[in-house]
Image (cartoon, rainbow, N blue to C red):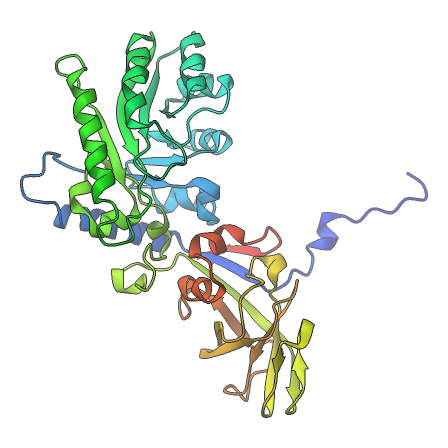
Length: 386
């Protein structure tokens, strides 16, 4: 309209910032293959399952790595597990024909219809799920009973399972395929033993009520349990964070587990400041130089997903040299110590996390987890597939 001005997307993106999140589907494939070998080589003697299939957990846009990259990187997975029905629809429309497990079950009756139409397996853990299934008039729906073994988020308490089982078995068009649970403390020694025993006791009781010849699939092992609890290897396991090259254990690096980082966040130095003793950098002046310090300003801030609470000393790599952040992270920038890199200046490459600095190191410094950093990378950050 006359008198109005419009800013087009092409103008906004004509000169993008150099901050880039690079994703490697080959690293994702490597991690999946490593986990599969881990299960095959550490299976307990006399294990009842002939094989353990792997759900690749791809919720939250594949932990921030992108569903399209997951489709490539996890092509050899036996199934995919997530909770967003729009994402499940995207996977089906883009060629994923293997099983899909909806970890939180249906959120309304239309989800049940989608599950039936697209062959999605639904977790059941609340009365509404039974109501929607009973009202469903269409193709059969596959379901898992989700058991609460101590995490106390979602799931049926052991005493409630029998009543749910009765209704599921009496509901036409519902096929009970399996049972699942999620451990609260599989990353601590012995933390999943009692929950696993609880699950097994309930599973035996459920199995005793099934028609002869019907055996349920069990799915209990997450990333941590896959590395520490071979007795949790069942018909299915569902690795999450380990698939993306981060460690499920505090104090143990992903590299020590043989995992490769699937995401690298890189930027550049925008400018350089020279501090004399007593001068500060950043909001609040929380870093004060005690000696001459050469400061580099990097084109990454909390609006890009870098944690604002990351303190001075958080590791970063500038031009291949490991150094530290300085002061408070701002919206679009952060400061790093260039004193050990005298030749660094505007345009010098910076790795915020990835190959040289693990995402777990940055997360630990900021008092959080690699999960959060992966999922927090902002839309304005450029994406690149390696």
